[in-house]
Image (cartoon, rainbow, N blue to C red):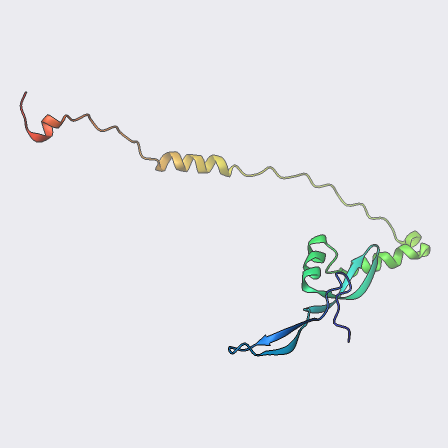
Length: 132
């Protein structure tokens, strides 16, 4: 089995085990490969991918490939099935107005907000007890 990603060509890397006494022994670092069915161009193909490429494919929307996408591609190839399938019109749905949560939050803030009063100015003489 070839340990190689088919997209980024990541493969086995040679390295060393290093002990506490600095003894070096040969070892191999293998890529984290997975078999996946992804959409490349307009075709669905099985490939071996490293997880970095698989994550990238998920972000691009190429993985996982839905069963409906596979069937659609087969129908496009045959002109007979496209002519036989009836077109179904979907009803238009009007968007629902968003709830007025901001206004409710602002009202709650106003209710819970305490009224701040400025403290009265007090002179040092009044605190110490000196008389004028």
